[in-house]
Image: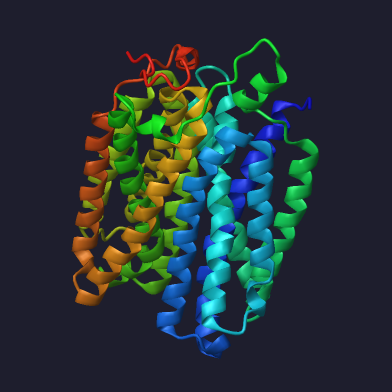
Length: 415
């Protein structure tokens, strides 16, 4: 299937849009669900539904990588989009909290599988030294999806069901477009089509073999800390700022400013990483995030200055997490790169659960401000430490990764 790079960019970006849309759709619908007591749901039930959804996303992310390394990128990605769309579409029809949780879990499996495969495809079709930028460009879709869900929530008002109907229908339409236009990029599938090319054997354990252990564990910790920051801040920033004494309206504006900063950071950070080196750039981004998060623990009187600090914080925090994905394409050979991406994303999802949970405990204890920002700053510093232990990839010759014999257990050539 011959297709332009433009179509690949559009389609991979579109699959990531659904994750941002889904997160905000659920969050925006919870107040109405609680007010109407739909299916008998209460605060505990809403927490269960939201948490089990993230568990499904984490499992889906971890499974999608090895599956796409064995069976190709195209069909698993389309299947993930279909699974997410179908279970999202019928979610509002569920009559009990238990069934709502089950469908959110199943939808999460599909949703979680989309991002690792989409980012892998983007990296595989990027220019030799453009893997980090391809990752950050793709992940801008997450924030666009979040904004789209926010606008949709305003339009539908109390008719929360239409958030999920919209997401499900658009997902099914996207799956048709993927089927028509998305090419196969897997080296395994390419090798099977060539009679004179040895098909590389895919072993999931390769990501934890030899010197890959150091690489993998470093990436896992960095991804965990990065998503702890992303989800912790997106969930609790308005409440933290309220506890700091800022007005409610100002707190909501600051959340928007934070995500605008995130989009700017993603547009800039990937290109910097590809030019200057992904390891050093990721460490700097995490380090800058730590400093800025600590600064937010100080009450800033000037509104313009506060908006500026929050914008720059979003610039560094969100991009630091995505730059971790930029490492993957440089550090693993192509025949297991999706497995590496899937496991990094899956472990990172544990941070997505831990971030809101830890911050919530601080809110309940009445010490979220300023200690919430101290916790976030500490997580960013741990991200710096995790990236520091990862060997520096040889960005100038990423093709070297493909020269490693399949199943040999030898590490990627590192500088």
